[in-house]
Image 1 (cartoon, rainbow, N blue to C red):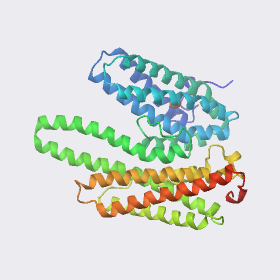
Image 2: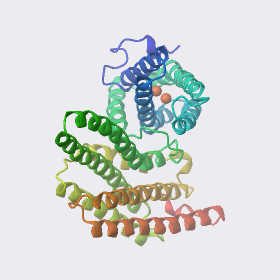
Image 3: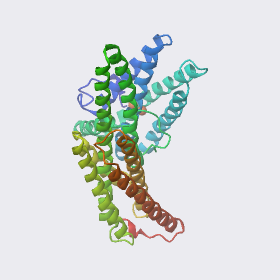
Image 4: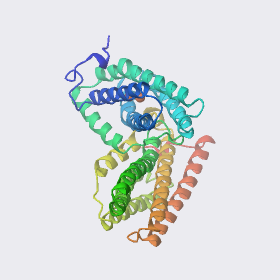
Length: 383
Ligand SMILES: [Fe+2]
Ligand SMILES: [Fe+2]
């Protein structure tokens, strides 16, 4: 009988870097935040705790869905059923938090919703620590649990921190759409933190406030561009893989053209970071990881192979990535109104290209879907 990870020592979990130990640390922090929230009366501190909890829960769940559950599905018998249950819990938490974020503090029914979401989070923690994670522990050696821990941590640091109904729960769609949305979330969090800092600074003098503003803007650009770069690296890797797998098919030329553009988009971004004096952060490891997983971790790899669905899923993933790119070029264009270091004409060109990629991908997707659903598809697209 598998032992709950709650009852094991860190060494038994595979060490502090193991994904099991990392998961448990996050869960303990969630518990602490929920307990503190419960002990406080209404007020600013209670709201701050709730915000902190939401950010932790969403980045944590995203890393689970992107890294952990695919590993469970690959390695644990009945893994699909096990992960479906926790994904359902995540969806309920997502929906409820989205409702809470639409209500202002103190409004009718909000407190009850918060308590409901806490009980869902606690249920999710129990299901993971008592059922899903011990099964993963039985299936994988400690070294692999530590490798998963590293990937989990990298994804968690660039994950969305708020609910997004548009993000699918499974790879590759969740990863490719989650990257740009994660960037937007962290910018939103940084704006809140920046405002709080500005409030403090204006008490201490205007000049300090202005300096804080410039620093906050640069920080936001750093988050946006690095995350965008991770997504662009993932998309470029996926497009290259698609050329390798489907390049001989009827859409080979279009796929090669898309792959070329994705590689250019990635270079354009790298150049943009250089021009703004922004250091490149961990995108390489994340981008390569993302691209590889996006290409390999289809919702059900074995079932898709040889059915033509593989191309369909990859086209969908690349479409999400192009959409993410377009959103981020648009965000940079908005920033260019105040920041003269940004080249608006060049950004507009890149935005048009992302929109064109979306159109091409829509057409390729419709064509592949039509052929598949009309029963005329062959396995020609699948390696
Ligand atoms: Fe979870
Ligand atoms: Fe969890």
